[in-house]
Length: 138
Image (tube, rainbow, N blue to C red; front, side):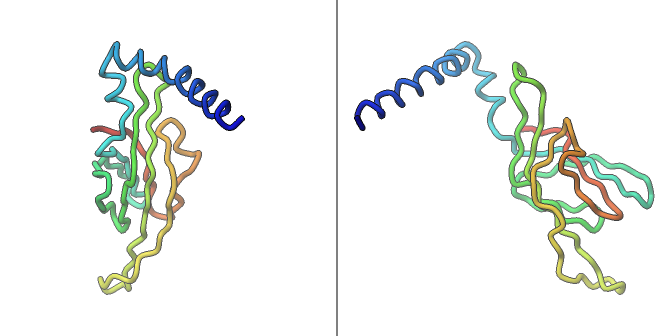
């Protein structure tokens, strides 16, 4: 019985993987575009000045936007043959100061997935800043 189940599981994997393998062999671009990106393009809004700024955030590196420290842990763009979507996993820390310029320990204010097609699904909630995902590039 156990051998029959593993053979059945192997056959099921082969059947479901066959279209993807055929697609990858027909166009190498589809395989490349489904891989994770190395740079996320983010847009930040300073609500006090009402100014927006687009900036790049390399995956795994911390970037600053105002008093926020943003680290993109993962980003991906769907391949062109699928419905368009860009998603990224971000961690955002609020770097507060004591009023005299000395930094106090930062507080993690966001850790989660953001989607370019629906930024309101899982937004960053901050009184001064908004940040959302625009794109993901290799």
